[in-house]
Image 1 (cartoon, rainbow, N blue to C red):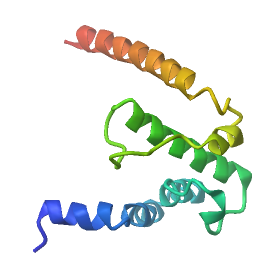
Image 2: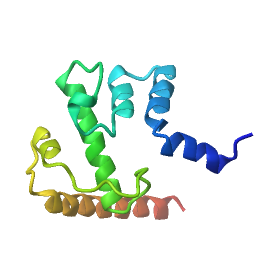
Image 3: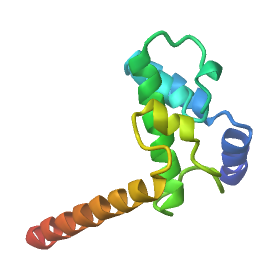
Length: 128
């Protein structure tokens, strides 16, 4: 039997988690767009993404990639990688964001994250 850590290494390190995730999404009956976002969330270059026919699906994948990068950059949660490197400017341009404004984007996300945490804390105190 494969130990939990070894299974993690096989799935994550071998780069299969995206494909396995797509299979789970398909089995659960999730949309084709969701399946594509899970399958291609590490393919920064849209030309690497196979069988995608709509700009909306490509944009969804770009948003997930951006979210993954922000998760890592902010050291919030687990992005699945030790380093994502620099945020590709062309990805930001495809999303209609300032390609040089990633620091401002991080500050904005941090501010919204702080506000959400405060709100959740308030709800937790009221529920206790």
